[in-house]
Image (cartoon, rainbow, N blue to C red; front, side):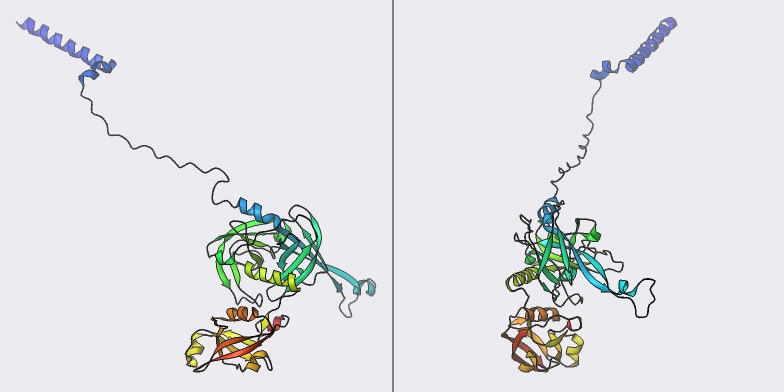
Length: 387
């Protein structure tokens, strides 16, 4: 009996050993005998969105540049001046050589072709006093330009070149321009060649900057540098929305604050210069200043908005109509006036000889005055704030 038990134990041990070895080397033999439990499905791996093809992305302004850039030109304005030696200076060469020597000053700027007839807009300060003006197109052609007319009040000038098949920039609509819209500045900064910079419209209707009499600037952070003056500010479709004019800078280079003359003012000046050779604006002979809440409270005025008249030119149109210092102009021709810039534009838009009805607050009395409109005198630095 004991011998049988030993034989049985040895047989079982050998059988278990065989099972273990087979399970390790041939697990698939035992698959049919196991209960399989499906593992939870893993989430599909995230697939990165396909990148748009080059040129198809909405952030590219290549089409706008192709549309606008050919119409932007480089301007070289030369001015000859007589250089004289200081009185009593001792020169190692004959005095006549130095005293009668001509010196040529060269200025660089940009311009925008606005007509197939060869008319182009630029800044008045780019060509002011120039004896010779050379215009170079983006296709390499060059030609001398003549000044059709200038408007110092807006710092605009209209030139004309005699070239065939000139590219022309399309005009935009300033009413469609909003703060935050993308814009491009195109010009010839530092004479490095035609350059395009991008930014947004930072603000509209910037005024009281002391840059010109008629101020209604578009502010942008698109880089504008010396040489960009007179160049184009265009929208994302390549349409002209402004003429680049000035920058705020402590270093002479761009600091992200640039100013452009709106296209509506540029077109108005262009049309007048083509038609009449000059820009005629209305003038009533007053010195205006924004009405402040402190002044209104001090004099117990019933109005809080308007333009304070601080001075009236003797025998001028406003004086003849009875306007006095201390009066507050609240409307012109039924259009509400809230600040000095609005008054300057409203009066400038009047065509002399004519008359304008001014709504005036004099102390506690509201009245209307019919003021004759005269032609605005040529702008001078000392009376740039007078209208």
